Amino acid sequence: MNKHIDRRHISAGLALTTVAVSALLVLTGCSKVPDTIKIGVAQPLSGPLGALGQDLLNGVNLAVAELNKGGYSVDGKRVTLEVVSVDDKADAATGKTVAQQLVDSGVVAVIGHLNSGVSIETAPIYAAKDIPQIAISTNPKFTQLGFPTTFRMVANDTLQARAIGSFAATQLGAARYAALDDGTPYGKGLADGAAAQLKAEKKEVVVRKSFDDKTTAFDELAGELKAAKVEVIVSTLNDFQALALLESLRKVGHTKVSLLGGDTIKTTDMAKGAGIVEGLYATSPVLEAKEFTTGKPFLEKYIEAYKKPPAYGGHYSYDSTYVLTAAIQKAKSADPKEITKAMHGINGYAPVIGTMSWDEKGEQRYGAVGVYELRSGSWELRMRSDRW
Image (cartoon, rainbow, N blue to C red):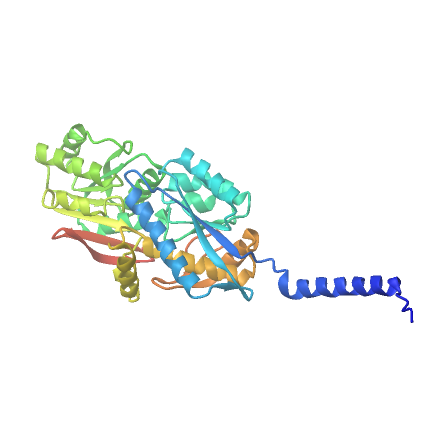
């Protein structure tokens, strides 16, 4: 018996099968979430600030390793996180070049940069592609650019300037002050703000000087400070510059002074200046991991992974990675624009510092500034506050 084959039924059946398979793919397999999500890290990984930049990269790598090991998923799909790191060399021009490289590589967010001048210059590049940028930079201009993509990990220089001015005015008991800066956006802005706070506290700033960030010849300045009978020096110079200034002060015999700096002098090298003047103090919005109740487990994991303690703010980049990845999960997407929206609405769990949350401009809601004193070769916390 000859069997008649109805090709129309076969065609219709195939069409129905295709539609059914397509529908199934839409429902189950055609996820908009990729298998791998790339997170960019842009920090100075070489040069004088290389140790700080590497520390920030280490924090991200540590968090990503933990998240991947724990089976990180987005919208029900297992995802592998990948870190794409670049060296901005603490230089704005280089920063712009590597920022574009990160954009071209397909990162969904960037943790960078360390330097305010670099963060400010690169922000438009990330914003053009709706890529959220989480920076440890503290210059207020970073979040005043008007981009929804700028987020800060720590308190900004406005709060730090108030901390410097308030502590110098109320705790150091002087009448005549000097304010010095290194000419960078960070240094000049912070020193200007500190000087303004001192004036608001009815203190006299008798010397106000700006240098570049490489100057170490301070004999003339030391003589001027002595002639002006300066009792407290507020400085945003780098540690090697501050040490050179201390030596110049010793030469001219003007050592009955205190020096209060920003976080650029809160280094181990500054121990070389101990005993030259009456007091060495530093302020920083980057509080140390050991100051937090949950800092100890992080420090143990960090030292196990890298065989050394954090050099700067690795715990902040670690926490930022956790909050960022929580925002990606909240967005249920790897679309940078959706991630940015989620970042603005999240009150994220930060394993070390507790929580991270941002206002509409991207300022950290819970940032604080600590004041440290150099004692017995190490920096000890004197006080900290989020309301100076």
